Image (cartoon, rainbow, N blue to C red; front, side, top):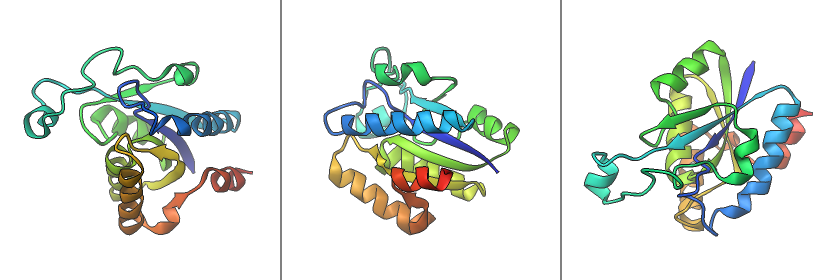
Length: 174
């Protein structure tokens, strides 16, 4: 079974006091996955002037540097960055990467539990790839209520056993 840790959208433009608490946990996960010879990859959301984010919800952030950059604390760990213009990581490039590397399980951490994590997990689930959400390594720039709503919907849509805490994931890796 090939597994991957996918670090979702840990970008300057999403980082706030509501999210910073997950950085040490994500670093701990990255270091463990790398030490075990497992893949660690990153996504980066890039908005455009003509997106539905702009047209329908009037949200025009994350269009350029430095907002689109992965936060400094995670820069040393970057191997690949999969750019995406929407919530899901499953772009054509990422989907090809998953297929080529025969990935059967995706551990998800990062931002935002209620949108990008949620959509990527459901897309993974629907493709027959097991998603695992690392709850204490996810957050939402919308705050705790948005994070909790995302976790609630994930439990309902992909199964409550697919939501784990960091210590549980690390113990299972031992």
